[in-house]
Length: 355
Image (cartoon, rainbow, N blue to C red; front, side, top):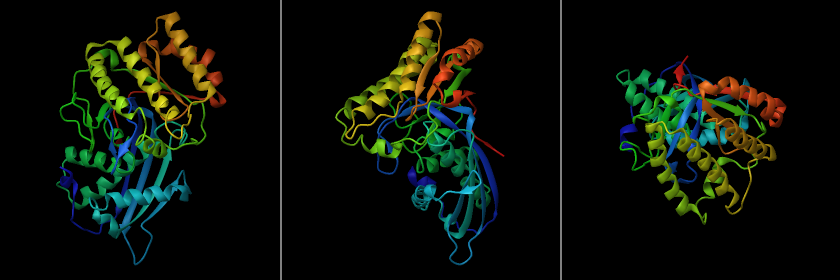
C-alpha cells in the first residue's frame, strides 16, 4: 500500500497554493512512535474550527543551486523551524520527487499561540501537505479527490503524526485498531461508524493556561515511551478505550464519553510523570481548573469535561446547549487561571479548505 503513494513524474511547474487547516484534539491519545512516524497505538480525534494554520506555498522551477525552501512564520524568517522542515522534505522525497526541482516559499501563520499545547504541528504540516498535493495535482490533473486527501494525510504524518488527522474533518482515526476495519498506521481515515446526534455540536473552549513554549517537546516525549515501564499496559488500555468510546459515540452515552476522555487526558500526562527522565507539562493553574470543572459538573449536573494535549492548556468540551452557562462559568471562575484571562471559543469543525 505504501508504494501507492510513490509518484515519479517530474515536471517543472509554478504557481501558488494556499490552504487553511485546523488543529485537532485527540480524545483517545497516542503516545509513542515507531520508526517512520508509525504510532504505537491508534488515536481518535475531533478537528476544530477557529484554531487553524493558514499556509501559502509559492513554487517555481529552481535556478542553479538555490536553497530548497524559504520559510516565513507570521511574516518573519524563523530558522528554528528549518531543521524539522528539512527532515520532513527528506522523508517525503521518495513520494514527491518533483519537489527537488522546485524552489518553495512557505508562508505560515497560526490563529493560536505556537508550541503551547494546542497542536500547531498538526495544523501546520497538514496545511503544507495539502499545498504540496496541489502541486502534484497540477502535474497529474487526473488525480481524484479521495486519493488527494489520502496522500495528503500520509505526507502530513511524516511531518507530525497528529497532522494526519487534521486533513480529515470532524471525527477521525489514525492508527490500526481492531475496532475500526479500515484504520491504518499510514494515514488517518474519517470516522464512518454511527455517531449519536448528541455529539454533533461539541463545543471546545481552549483555556490558555500558558502560552509559552513547552519545556519538553512532544518529539522528546514520544521517544521516552520506548523504554517506559508502563508502556505495554498503556497500549492495551488505549485499544480498549477505542472500543469503549466507539460504543459511547454510537449510543449517545455522554457520561461514558466524559469518563473516557478525561481518563485518556490524565493517562497521557501520567506517562510523562512516570517516564525516565520524568517531566511535568501541566501547571498549577491546570490543576486548579480541573478541580473547578469537576465541582461544577457535580453541582450543576453538567456534561462539561476536559481534555489535554501535550501541554498545560485545557480543552473544555461540552454540548452546544450549555454554551451560555459554560461561558458564565469560564468568565466567573476559570479565566482568572488563564494567561491574561485568555481563552478561545471553538467547536468541532469540518476540516481544511482551500483558499
